[in-house]
Image (tube, rainbow, N blue to C red):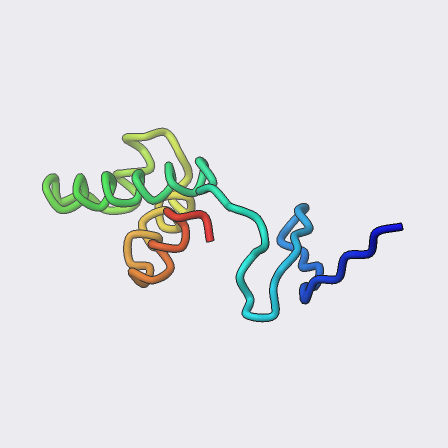
Length: 92
């Protein structure tokens, strides 16, 4: 019989359960989540559009046929810490 011991624990992240080392880093090679990358891209694009066209969140919502609160939530992603953005883009 073979026995393997690792210094890790299970950690839930939404519906996903992962092994995490004591240092807090995952055991597996992670990839960026495509939907989060798309949201970051959208936040930058919409922010630029708001600046260039001098649009409000309400006008953006009407233009893109989404709810004003959705526009506000997406735009806030534009101002995330560079460290958080890097972690999203590297899949950490």
